[in-house]
Image 1 (cartoon, helix red, strand yellow):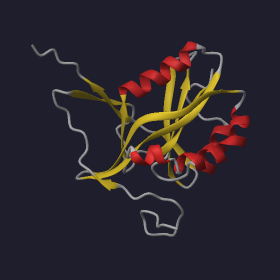
Image 2 (cartoon, one colour; image 1 turned 120 degrees about the vertical axis):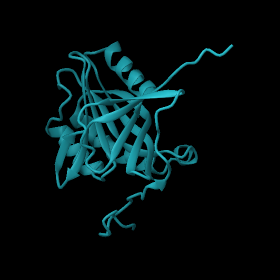
Image 3 (cartoon, one colour; image 1 turned 90 degrees about the horizontal axis):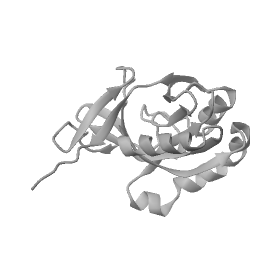
Image 4 (cartoon, one colour; image 1 turned 30 degrees about the vertical axis):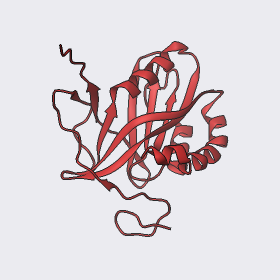
Length: 193
């Protein structure tokens, strides 16, 4: 058993690794998307990750897909932050309710995945592409998130491929999910002779 950030007993809470956050330079750009309120945790999302998730969602927009978000949880000079660097186990699902039945086993396996640990990544939540969800959680999305992804650095990325809307959610206090803004990091290609 480990301790929560605030010192209360908890389970499996990973404390942030000290690391300096990304700052804009000539190798990449950072664009703020959504709210400016960080709720004490800044979020960086990599452009290639969101681009691939959106492509997959729009490839067959009538289908539901789900999987897990991965990345890193860090502490820097300006406070705690998360880097959403990738995703795993993306698959077509029949329903969010059906996905709920298998998510516990898959989530436990992912938390102990050696390849993920060796790459310095941790599970950071889940994503769901669901037609007509408007990028907002419904009852089963709330149950999934509050049951399996209830730590302060866990996220739910909801994509509506038909309306081309997304929302990134995080629990900021007991049982309340908020749509949080994020910093989109995009690599800049330079042509050097």
